Image 1 (cartoon, rainbow, N blue to C red):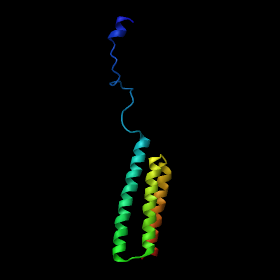
Image 2: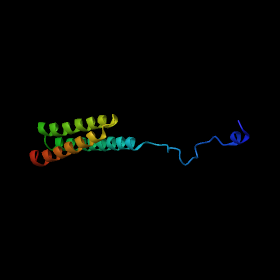
Image 3: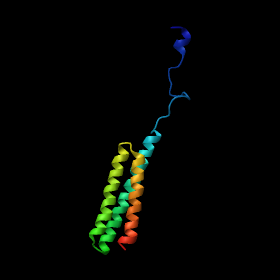
Image 4: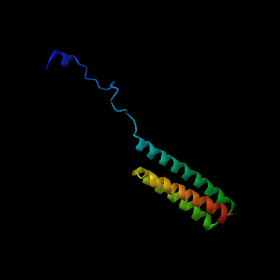
Length: 106
């Protein structure tokens, strides 16, 4: 080994070409879907409790219960990396729950 090779710094942490530490874009997308589904799940649970306090109906429990199950499924899909499918299911389930709440349950 020559003298110039021995004095060369071995620290590659300050290289501009080194990859940045932190989550990848896919990991950030999974976390965002999980957070969105968790928030929607909490909101659906609150709305379910409010609807049941005003009237007790099996249809209300069915609609919001299915939405809660769907949110849990989306969380699991996002954990496994199926974020697009989870997003589509979450949007479709939310739209269906809103339509059912607006027209059928009113």
